[in-house]
Amino acid sequence: MNTKINLAGIEMKNPVTVASGTFGYGREYSQFFDLSKLGAIITKGTSLKPKNGNKPPRVCETASGMLNSIGLQNPGVEYFAQNDLPFLRKYDTKIIVNACGNTIEEYVELCKILDKLDIDGVELNLSCPNVKQGCMAFGNTYEGVKTVTQAVRKVLNKPLLVKLTPNVTNIVEIAKAVEDAGADGVSLINTLLGMKIDIQKKAPVLANITGGLSGPAIKPVAVRMVYQVAKEVKIPILGMGGIISGEDAIEFMLAGATAISIGAGNFIDPQTSIKTIQGIENYMQEQKIEDINEIIGIV
Amino acid sequence: MLKAVKELAEKQNIPCQISLEEKMGCGIGACLGCAVKKAQSPKEAPEYYHVCKGGPVFKSTDVEI
Image (cartoon, rainbow over all chains, first blue to last red; front, side):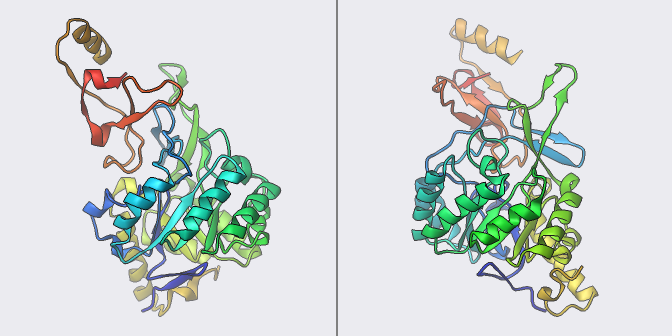
């Protein structure tokens, strides 16, 4: 049975990765399982300079999901390179850094640094809904996505994925911008912009007022977007949005994802990602599938 | 209530520790959801502890609630 896949030039032992922002830099989860079991780890969104993040409350629960507005709190790329990367490199898994910035110049500067580090790829974050500048501001137009991606492509030789926001009218058009700009793959989807109100206080629950919705609640939206994009673009898709089991992962792969990420599922059970790997293998056995690549995009 | 206890203790110079609650995502220090503001951190760029890992019990003088 073969579970190896190639995502945008990154050879992975299985199609399961962990989504940016739900897994930190791996340290906390290494207490629960051997990180070498994962196909890849996508790091917390990392910026050129450290970021303190948004005011609390930053998270709240909703039906079958959660809202978050962390605000990309991270220690900056320099700290990451010195402290977190050596730790992650002890494990036999691929390391993909989620890169975020406020301006095109910041994205370019950051990716110049990332290109020199011992990492396997970069996931460009053009989709965080919780910061005032950058990110989703670039990610919701064809031109914005193409301009940033092209600028980064010029300085980055490593595999480049671009993570898109679902908060757009036409996801296919935005994914085409990624392909046209010469990126190697596209990550679908980031969180859906949402809001919750405390009816006793008569005020928003989150200090940032709005936040990103994730968890099983958004899975059908994500599957639909992966399906639509897979039909129209040639570059591979890293699918995510509410995956908590092998069955969910298979759904994304049938829709056209080459690999998948576990996000909010890591919060329900820190071992969700490795249980998902087992679930995929069980499905392959039941269905007598020799190679996982056979099922990608067959729906 | 914690805020009142914190103020009273600090006014009377009584050492005080408080056990905080904040909504958590992961509960293990990875998601950075359960932030609480560090005392005396700059207003324009406030810094945060996280209740799940840095706490839940803090010295009352270390945090701003």
